[in-house]
Image 1 (cartoon, rainbow, N blue to C red):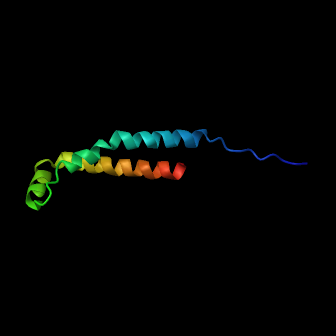
Image 2: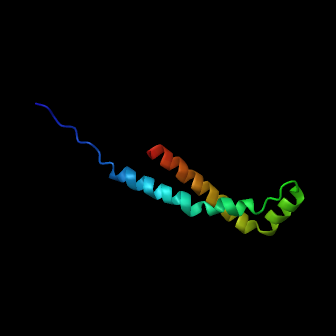
Image 3: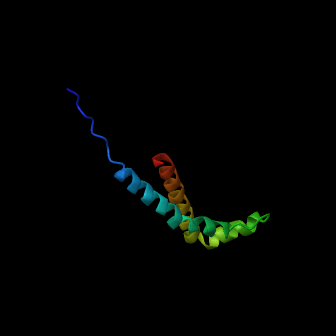
Length: 78
C-alpha cells in the first residue's frame, strides 16, 4: 500500500512574498530621505543636517532597515 504524501500548498509562501515585496516599495522612500541629508565633500554640513532633523533621519534609517529585511525575505521565499 502506497501512502500519498501531502504536499504543502505554496499559497502561504506566495502571500508572505507578496507582503514582503510590498514592504520594499512602501519603505523605499526612506532611502531617498536619507540621501537628502548628505552633502558630498562637506562632513560638517552633513552632520549639521542630521542633528537638525534627527527624528526624520531616524525614521529614514528605520525605513531602510525594513526595506532591506523585506528584500531578504523576498529573496529567501523566491
